[in-house]
Length: 228
Ligand SMILES: Nc1ncnc2c1ncn2[C@@H]1O[C@H](COP(=O)(O)OP(=O)(O)O)[C@@H](O)[C@H]1O
Ligand SMILES: [Mg+2]
Image (cartoon, rainbow, N blue to C red):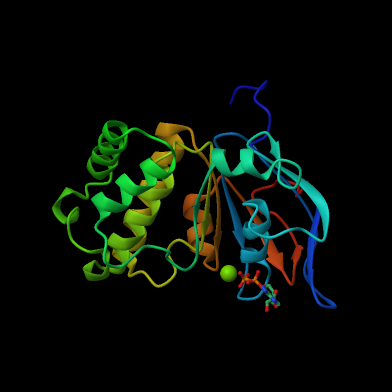
């Protein structure tokens, strides 16, 4: 790790209320560039709320966070340009194929037609998706669809990637395969990853550091690290 590299994610006192209930209290955490950080917690513990705040989709009620060098409330557009997001619910158009979705994403990022096509082909190859590249995503398996989600999130070469429960609902083989892909991203492409999970095993296998979220509070962080 280059010691001069600023943290990829720095969160200070971040919280969000819904009505008089606090979904996330006062979160403090830091993720270093190149790390895979896991936010582990049961249903309703505030994982998605945290991800939605950090990806600028939801305004915090309090606190601040810097993601990929920009402030999530003061400069959300810069944050959005520098991150990739895979949400819990897949947002893919079921009638489109992986190749079309990758191309569309490139064009949305202002790539030229040529750049969008080339970047799509590169990602189809690196995720071994050529065999089903032209099949509508509605006809793909859950594991294949998740790979498409991941590839689409990588089109713009994000500095930080957010994955909200990326393997929930997948069979064990697809899960392991996705773990491999996330590891490769982190090691080979130096993307910083923040993922959420309900599975201790997943956090253990995949993450450099883990924070445990309980009822909107970061409880403890195993592997000998402090939360802040
Ligand atoms: N839009 C919303 N309106 C009201 N309550 C919400 C909303 N989003 C989440 N919550 C509540 O906040 C808490 C945390 O939810 P969430 O962040 O989705 O947890 P997780 O992703 O860990 O399952 C839950 O009690 C949930 O019901
Ligand atoms: Mg969730």
